[in-house]
Image (cartoon, rainbow, N blue to C red; front, side):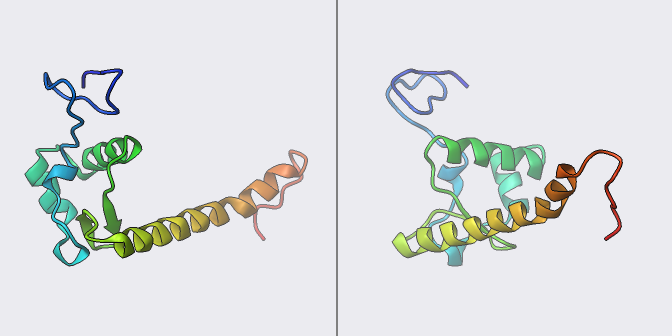
Length: 118
């Protein structure tokens, strides 16, 4: 991927045009979501992990790509779908941080004194 200091994302030899290849493949609206398996095939990615890496890159560079647990991927059709996506992702992040809370607490105890079976 080529870099262009004037664009957040620049692909190929198209100066002045930001491009999100995965986002451009997505249907609009949650009800039209495309499955991970179908998007892997459509995008030409070698695996779902590679697809997730591309999606993360595009999201980090400004693309709004919605997803839900088992619902696939889509572009939001309205503001409400963006709000719902943010709510779900924020809850997922809170749950991830909560999962490490007890492990981090154990790390605060002096080494050799942890009781790992609680």
